[in-house]
Image (cartoon, rainbow, N blue to C red):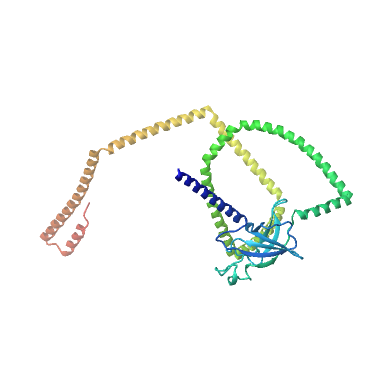
Length: 418
């Protein structure tokens, strides 16, 4: 029992302590106090703060980076002390500090606008405090600047009063505004009628769209199927565009390299056109000098020859149209067909004879035998010639004839009879 009571009392105590810590943390957060973070302060003097209060935001590049700690009014202006939350944020020296508001009835804040040129810091250990701060480059702790008052809702009321005063002082302008208002009313009524017509049209279109719903679903399905192909085609088009870009660059380079050649070519083309113009003038003169009568006579002769050729073609066509000629031509074709069949039969018979292997061997043996017979005949003739010479020599030796007769006999024997 005592243990449970002690546990409850301890839980209540812890809950009270947690509530106090949470309340203190919220209070510190609302006052802008950040534990573990170092901040620094800068101040600016404005001619008018237009209802700005302590705790309002301080923005840099559109982002909240601090708050207004205090506002001190003075004789010639109002000094606003600003607290920058993080010392890691280095604000350039040449900035514009201006009061602004987020709307007609929105909160006011101080907008710190950096210079247009980009600022770089060579020292990575630079801070807004003490000797580590370069006052020529960044805003240091305690820096004082001059601010600009922006336009707020309080500045609009005098402008509206001046506008109404000028409208009341200038009746023509008021009449023009009234006429414009009337025209606007007429236009509004016409727009109302148009809206009614548009409503009816929308109803009709809605009924038509209902009939197109299924088609739209089918198209969406097809589009989903074709998306992959379209992506592939787009990639190919992109590659083609890159190649075309390279081609254009190459063409530009080629044109730049051959600029002188192009100029010479254009000059040559100009000279050629001048020569062609002179040639056309000469051609016109030659046409003017041409004997048109002779040309007409030649054309008449050509026409007469064409008429004769047409008559001859007509006679040939009539000849082919004659039945007798057709019969004769058919008989000629039949005879040619029979002749071709006979020639084909003879060719087939020859192929049968020459295609027999035994017949080819017999012909080959016959040719070889005739060759042997011819060679044997030549050998036999030489032997007969030798025998005759030998017999004549023996005969002359036996009769003891003189040498001259023997030489004549030898000459005679050298011419054998065939």
